[in-house]
Image (tube, rainbow, N blue to C red; front, side, top):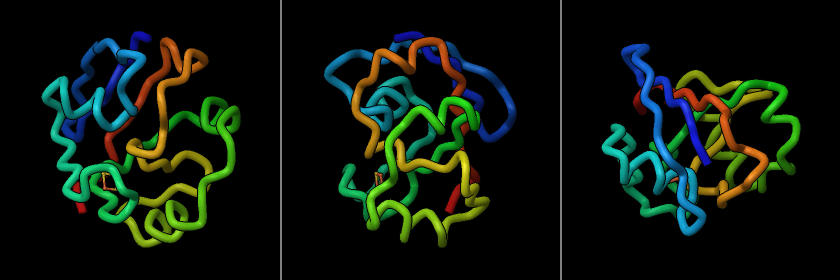
Length: 104
Ligand code: FES
């Protein structure tokens, strides 16, 4: 998948999301400033991203753990916030724009 990522300074980056990566891994492995300090276990929220609402709506419900963490996160958006470590590779997300949330 091709992704466009908007970083915290508003610059855009094009990257390739490989099928064996979660979204968090794709961001981190492409040198975007995603700390992922919990290693992808939905307990740090440093992998918080925003998706466009129409894209967000195509994804399933967030788990209780994910939602709890996000609700406390900087800039939380009810229809847009996701923990990128909880998003496995998904062909339907080809070509979407992902925006990094403010740093925790
Ligand atoms: Fe920690 Fe996603 S990497 S919550």
